[in-house]
Length: 186
Image (cartoon, rainbow, N blue to C red):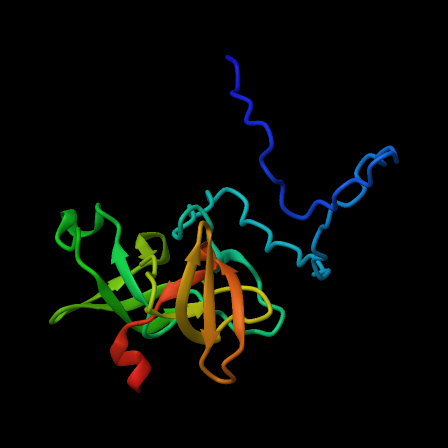
């Protein structure tokens, strides 16, 4: 399969070559520096018990230990959906709100779907993908647990204005969860 070639398309972050001077390979490329984050070792699995599959777009935040003891996923006030197999699909297509985290160890929660409040284990919870102008919570990283407003989306990243100090953060959308409007008012 041939890939089409598009000549004269400007490449971002390249410094133009000076005429008559040969280019140095890789010169002029600008790579933003990423701050070093020390690796946190994973919690070892219990022998003989299969792992719980991830519940949030292929990433299981509940299995990651927290250096500061805070767990952002799941958290009270986040909007979630139930797995389609939960209670025979009774809540399929409905959005619920986490009312209480019963166990941080397995991410089990009490979730309100309208007037129904049900117990859901972590492997049955799925976070709701936020959209522009939604209130969000950052689920992991240095800003884990902070709330803000999603002011923009750039492909796979969300641009978040933090509530506490109006800082602007760019976070992967997979690190964001939608906060129910009633939880923001509380």
